[in-house]
Length: 350
Image 1 (tube, rainbow, N blue to C red):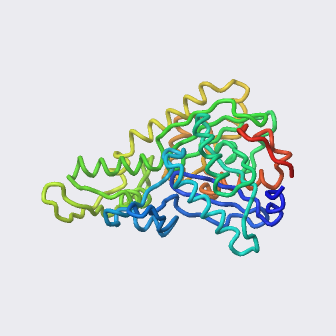
Image 2: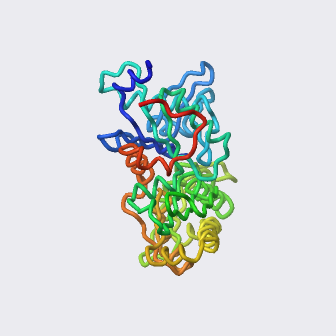
Image 3: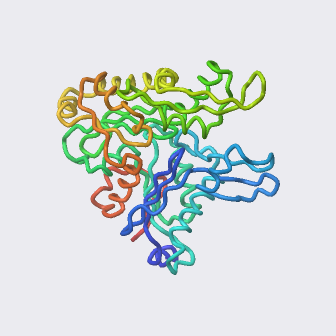
């Protein structure tokens, strides 16, 4: 009863709880938060020092007793308490401007399609403990498809590839359900690791994670570029221990990313092979849709199109597709309840 009364003063929210970034959509207002999924903790006191953008600035720059870490690994909760604190921080931030003393919102939250029941429960419990009165789970490829306004409830094949920070989700959707799905751990973070490994093997250079990500954004590509790109690679020389700077081009970084990009493209091809022929015919006509931050890798759409022999479309604003989908569901939960994942708790009365 109390939850329902508090719910009247709360704003319903949609959350894309990503490995790299967390985005929050507020019903009636749109996307209000887009922050890195990073939390800085003082290990001596157990106190949380900062969350989001401020915590990300601390990565690799903290003293021994302060740890700036990501509480989610490959799209699933690896540190329950820190995830709960992070969600509470975002829920409270949304309600700061209103008169809600104890916010109890309904929350629609995206989860990877390949998660286990235990991992699903961890997300749901963390969200409830953070202050939600009702939690609705939706698989990220489904949320992304809804977010880019694909007709997911019709008898038509829709293929979506969501390349995030920790996972890549490949899904074929028809009649409000996922017909074929693939979830793999090759995504944005793995590409950063590839660059770090390449720098170590080729140049005896030790790079930080943030530097590797900047290099990927500056010159990273999956396909030969018309205009060559160059950037500087700065780190510590493994042999001398001194600072070192090297100029690298897009061809070298493409070589570093080659194996991971191939595994990503192979997963898309495998998903197409498993798809029923009628749905493949629909996908050939409509195309494969790329969403998520990883889809911004230069030439990836071209490579996937060449390998699958199908049209490939990089959607507008691919980073927000999942959270936009949670927002669409929030606006009309009753009409879209069939696309939600079953949860362990019964839905409370409205």
